[in-house]
Image (cartoon, rainbow, N blue to C red; front, side, top):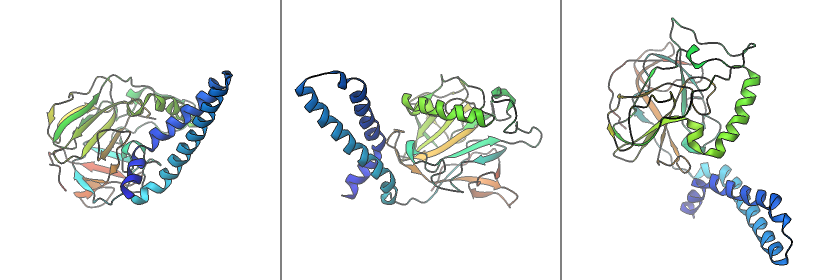
Length: 291
């Protein structure tokens, strides 16, 4: 029973969208058809869609209680230097508010060097060029030894969403992007499969900066792209996550810790993640993926 519920939980998004598609088709198309057989089929389809949609909603809230516990996996940080954490699993889980697309334990990192402050949020300018942010163009490194299974590189780098009006636009934009699928949300991204079946993803990379291809073997610490502002992103930053499957639609997120980093004003190096609004300093060194 538990296995069946977990299987449903993996495909909850697909079930929900399928139900919505049937209901929309009924409202827009099927109502225009006048035939007893069509009416019977339409009624059955609508009832089935309502049941499937209800199951998807229920399993979305109940499913996380069934997920097995995993110890954090220590990986090298995907960036070097001084970075600020946003949407961190060290503060809350799921870190981005939802568990969809394997991002329950994902973290967002923005570059925050001492000598170049990033533009502040708010003000009259709703959008800024990505080049105005110190994160844009910074090297992004592989978090694991393994084989590349996904490598998207053609999504454009858009302007930032720099005040509340622009964030409202971002939310509408995000709903449209979701219709296109996970790739349109992550923008340019790379996913690496380790030998033991863990999948490490970094996202929102700069257009045409991805240097690896599907099937290529890479080593942890290798530069695989540069920080950009592609996909559903409010400003140039690096989104990093671990998953148990390659498919973003069905993957569960896995907890992680960055190896050998200094968190805030504390002693270092330590293995861990910065909390929301906490800085992280890294040392540019090769650190192998380990349990």
